[in-house]
Length: 155
Image 1 (spheres, rainbow, N blue to C red):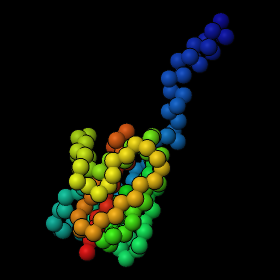
Image 2 (image 1 turned 90 degrees about the horizontal axis):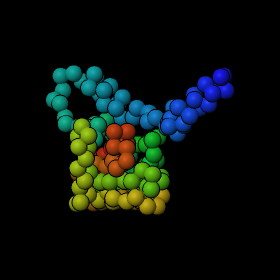
Image 3 (image 1 turned 60 degrees about the horizontal axis):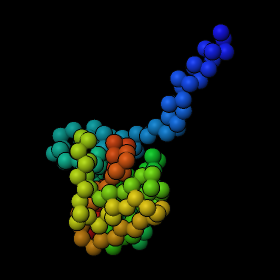
Image 4 (image 1 turned 90 degrees about the vertical axis):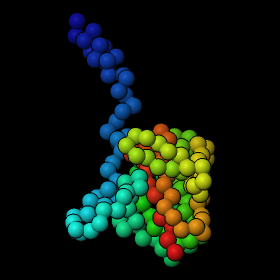
């Protein structure tokens, strides 16, 4: 009888075999930075967030010729501020984490066909570069709640 109970436990746990704790997305550092910035300036005018990012809390990479973005559940940096023409290179598995230029509001995904961030589901690198200042959101089509961010191009 004990053998049947053990087998039943093994069979019942199979659907969860691929759901290890290591697969769970970690909170993004940008979220903490935004909360800290808000707490430091409680009387400041609220600035709308784009994909949980604000320009003030974004990693400052202005003046750099190139910036690397690690694309996966360990996305970093998720929010980055760059100069025009900076090459921002996303590196990761786009077949598992399809990259899309656009925004996430709640769970509403809005792709932006005019975004310099390419939509791709193949390969392992994608390079973004633009001379036009603006906020260019991006997200993972498979995991938008965990993987989203913004490239802020500033003059």
